[in-house]
Length: 269
Image (cartoon, rainbow, N blue to C red; front, side, top):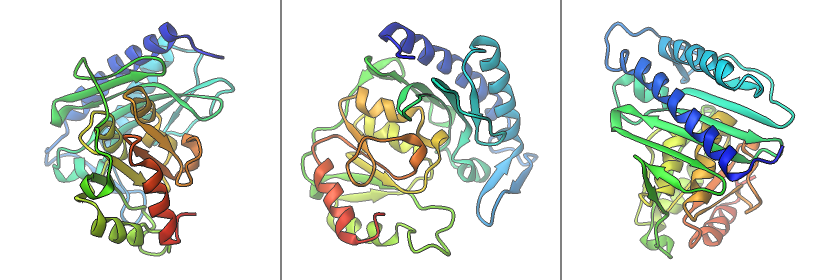
């Protein structure tokens, strides 16, 4: 199924409406001492608002767009043959659980080739939301935004993150982080892949890279980057399939240099 511009826009608007509902629910548990927090892994947290929020979002999407399958971070699901909703009820759960404001609700729509085609992200503690779709703009709080004009890594503010298996895996992003920290103006690590991509799209960051991501981490914001004039690929510079983990997003101007920089470290596979 190939979406036209209007269809993609309508899906983005639907995602935004329902992401706002999920955010309203999550806000009731943010910085609450009574919020239940448990572990999915050694350092991977889940809260009751992840599960409750996903249940709400899945219910609403199922009612509004029953023809599109849903895959959620907490409840799973099967991808569709044409389009799929990917739901992250709280991206940045560790931040949420600790009272840090850098977290969001993310709903993205992905096609059969793994391409992000529309989505919405709501970050209530930051009072900011983004919406975008292929063929349209990326909107930050309703205003069109665009990537930065920085053309050198040495003048760039970058962002990254580290995988949950960083204690045991050689592909933990430490070497890449150290190499680019020495070269760039700055590298931030704030704990939400979805928001990092949003901040590339709106020109806050000049570039972002991270490995071992899940589809729901990037399904919404990947299309924001391209809609805002940027570029998003895997680490080798190939077109991004959100199902395959390694993500590199930039303003386009520093992209090839960043691909080379990651490759030169020797652990970019």
